[in-house]
Length: 145
Figure 1 (cartoon, rainbow, N blue to C red):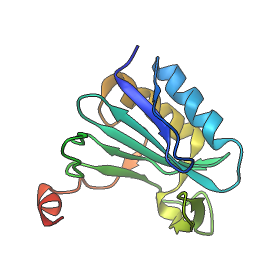
Figure 2: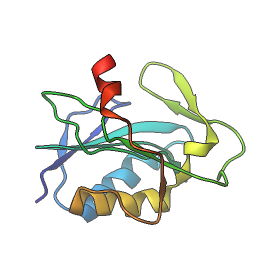
Figure 3: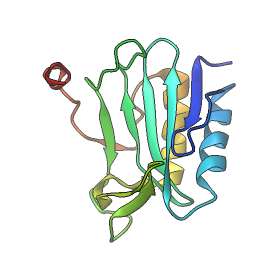
């Protein structure tokens, strides 16, 4: 058993215990595989760390916040997966639970890459190789909020 939980934020679901890295990937595929529009999915570690994906059947965003805690939500050190050559031509549309929004194509990755990255993060709680990452969010940005 891992120390991670999963939640479909678009549906407002209750957290589900992530039993293994494979189960984390299974939850990603199960909750994103029913719509062409992205849904917001969150994984939270009991001590420190949060993974956020906006995923549909084929595509997903990926953000890892290594310093996030429930008592002090922090974006410092947070990085997002990016593509040099976008996998889609148009903005990625998703449902955040209240309305439709969109994300620039640069932040959209193939869901296969995201599933591998989630497995790695759940197992190691660090940034996996094989994905180009944005620069980390500096600590001073957190202090401004």
